[in-house]
Length: 223
Image 1: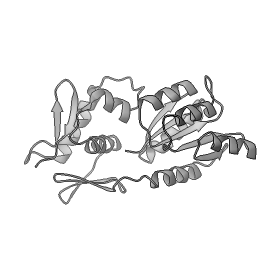
Image 2 (image 1 turned 135 degrees about the vertical axis):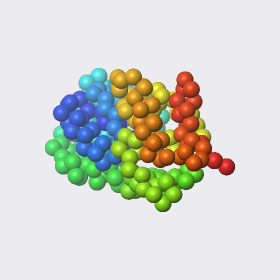
Image 3 (image 1 turned 90 degrees about the vertical axis):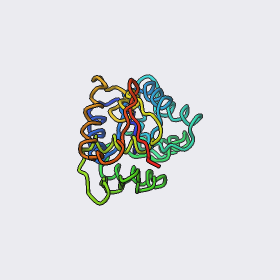
Image 4 (image 1 turned 60 degrees about the vertical axis):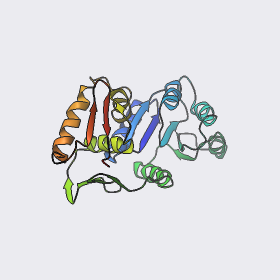
């Protein structure tokens, strides 16, 4: 699961980035000020952080420095209009891994993001019982038959497979797949689970996705 936190106070920029990155199958959370950004970082794990330099409440530099006291490995990419060598060095010395100046090309940003994820790439093939998930091509197979899933169905299945053997609560699923600010009833998850179950058609074997009543769901691997 490739999760990205965007900390950006310009709504137009954050919406543009969120839409573009979600189309590339990233799971994106957005914070519009430094304090909220730091709060999200304390509550969740992300694969990468895109951090604006000038933020209300707490600057990007401050967020970066405080986060680095607890996490030294998660890549941080600064977005900023500051373009002097001194600013670049200041950003990197605060703990950032990369630095891109506004205005920027989305294609360039996407390539830099992919490079940072490449170093920590998960195993490309996930298998659970008769199910095979290719995270490079986003294809899902039951035995040799390809199963066509929507983007959210795919993300939800990968999330459960990544946490196989563990109960994933509805609260965590909504927070991690639909964003922490998602306001709809968590019953929407049941709709997606039912759709995935129908497409996978595991009637001939034990139900791959188990319902833990009142809590959430889990994937169980058969012995």
